[in-house]
Image (cartoon, rainbow, N blue to C red; front, top):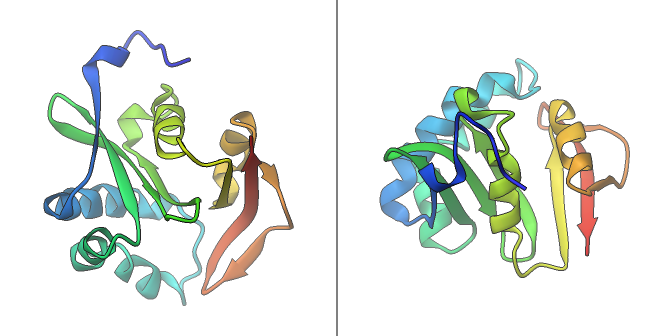
Length: 154
């Protein structure tokens, strides 16, 4: 399970997001957006999907349920799940990557779902495979964003 000397599990608090968290979620995602494989032509539209007003609408309209991870009141990770079991967003602060926080968020976000889909960034395929996800096709590019469709089934 989750264990790392630099981020003890007891120091990370998870809670469900509300619309007041939209700015913090947006800032976290935008700070990591350069790590996503997106073409120059699709970059502006891609970044617009992470603006505060968009995240706020997703939360308010119950289109995406976000779980947030905090360490010392600082947002260090977020997972967004669509009601049909699609893992929509998973972002972990660079300083907290490779510490088990992503796994912890996936475990929390996927509770209650027998089947979970994700469109994984090519750089995250290995992470999802370690969690039991399997590719359901080849890497695709849509609107300038490259991803591999993946599925987890209990």
